[in-house]
Length: 151
Ligand code: FES
Ligand code: FES
Image (cartoon, rainbow, N blue to C red; front, side, top):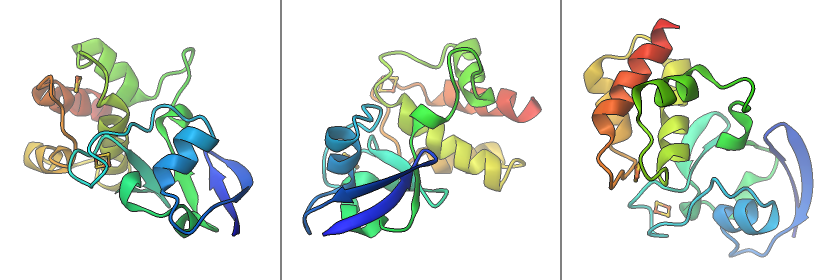
């Protein structure tokens, strides 16, 4: 079936099969490599994207469900020249180790920053529970959120 979806502000008309996942569409078809494939079953959160502004695990969403909706991946968050405040804060506090979970962590925290900038440390921690960081950077993520909030 043919669907139209908006990804990072650009409208795409694509043919998808009924069982294509959103991860397949974003990574394989549109080349957005920040969308990682980890567990593939909704456990690791490494495939998080924002769907109409809210974090979802793209491996659990079928591509056709993105029809008429807006998707944001970390590619749209900032640029080398103009980092998003969260990206700047991640660099400043040294939150990035292997980097594999960073796109998801940034998107989860962006949603929190936009929806509840006054979030408590506990709420930040709760939001990050959906992202598996094998390097254990969670305390740095929390610190980065605090810095980004202050900016
Ligand atoms: Fe693990 Fe999607 S790949 S939750
Ligand atoms: Fe390595 Fe999170 S920075 S998995």
